[in-house]
Image (cartoon, rainbow over all chains, first blue to last red):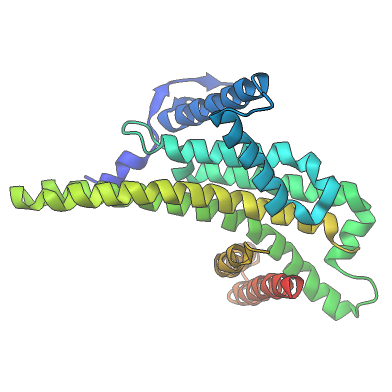
Length: 243
Length: 63
């Protein structure tokens, strides 16, 4: 039996729509739960906002301030409009990652389809923001600057297109690989008990799992931060590019 | 910026992904037009150039 099968999503609620299988999997349900938690958290915090902040209000304010000062600083006032998107992205990915550490819940971020969807959303937003800010002409001039000899322009065009397409791929693969690897290591350590059939082996997977799980909390935070930070830097790049 | 190292650390994967993407697109072109191995060779070259160009651009911006 392949132990990594445990990291594959399993259907919880079978659902077919227009001939497509849109069944709810345990991974999708964890994603929905994460989204609900994030929405409820920010709704409650914003409703109960006070001049002297509570612990939860403090956490939300630190998060918003961090995204504004660290990620969107180059955009100045213009960056304010991107705050809701980036804060939501960070909170959602973090909630998904952390919920995945609870036994029985499969993190949606350990599924490439999910991370690819997030990366495609970021990619489309970045491209749209660039086109809206600089117009179609300015957008095309950023891909191939005018005045270049045609052989250089012909080479530069596919280079620029692949360079742009590589970004969502790397975003999706990075988040997926990091989250999947952590859970795969945990499963492999547990499987040592069944492979060796020996009581003396038990302390190794137990202690190893405690360490890996503690490390996974750190990885969850770092990966949510990296995804958001890179998305923000792509947005800043698209808005600032001189066309 | 304090977080420049994150951009730098992400470049490695971006270069690798660009090379693989170029190779994949070239391979698909080869399959469609039976032009082996020109499509894949060109795809790898363009992918590598795209990855390196991304890295150089980030480096120039952070300079």
